[in-house]
Length: 246
Image (tube, rainbow, N blue to C red):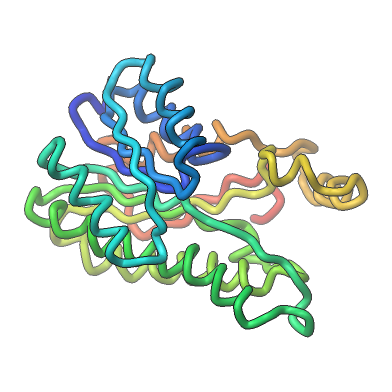
């Protein structure tokens, strides 16, 4: 129970990687603010993981809207009077080759993935600075470092998260706030399961370990980065990709 008594906000936590992160942190004793735009799914997840011990507060929030990101943090402070951990996991895709990509699809992905990370971080940093401690983990992607045809908007948003992480780490280190990023490779989620076989085969051919990752691979990395054992690690990008990108 290395996180007992701490409060963790996890965005995009209703399913997939976000759900695994929330479940892992609650198993370590943290109280969880489980945020997602899909409220019914978020409530279902909360009911399942709350049986593991600590408290779960479910909040529907569109992280692209600053006021909703602020409300997310405000509700956490109302309930527990502290915010110790923020995991910026909320993310979307809207894939297309650049010649076919609509401006609204570009904006949609950048607003949620990158601006949403900024909004939640800005809101969370205030109580963390007062506490003189905090841990922020931003979920980027292997696509943000190596690119991918047909995903220029997604790749740009995830690359932007890396730049944001490194800048924030320098800004916040004097206040004892660690900021790191995780860049997952191809992870076995509902999104990847729905891909055509030829695309999945091509993905597998790029992974030296010969398998997709699982959401728990990312969750365990988050658990380490928010622990005291990682207190001297900040501004880093941890690649969890089975050797796909080195």
